[in-house]
Length: 198
Image 1 (cartoon, rainbow, N blue to C red):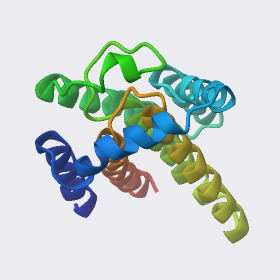
Image 2: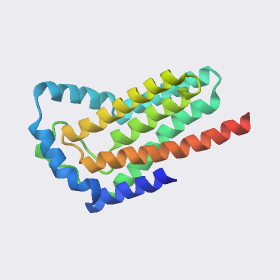
Image 3: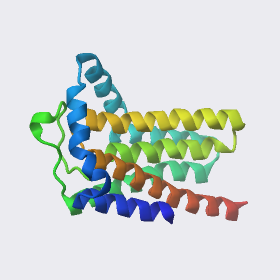
Image 4: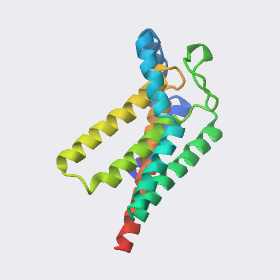
């Protein structure tokens, strides 16, 4: 419930210009100043591998693997969490219709609204789902490694969106929180479903 409240607050703050939104201009300016051909090449690769389509494919592959292993509830979580997360962030984008940073500052082409970042939302939902599904099969060290790697990837994907000039800083923060909140909702339903099956 706390994550849902934080997600709503982050989206509202970004939309009206409070909180993290006050760092939007400075964050974009800093990114532009630190651009280089090498960094840009890396950012483009990361943002492409972490885009919503790639994350959707990853979720389907995870779901297919779980289904093949006879883990039906896990398969449903992987696919449904991804699909509904896409619906959630797309709906918010369409309702709020927040403009992206100026075209002159963008290094890649984008075509929809800015708030929240779909890359940030989908990466945390899909990678977070993988962490949730793998959790009970790992020892403490394995869990720690998985969480660190997952957080690093999600953070990197979000950072590229600001670096490439296609999202405001507050779009990414809102996307992470929307994704985390939606993952928590889906994981709660999944956990109760598994408990009933047991």
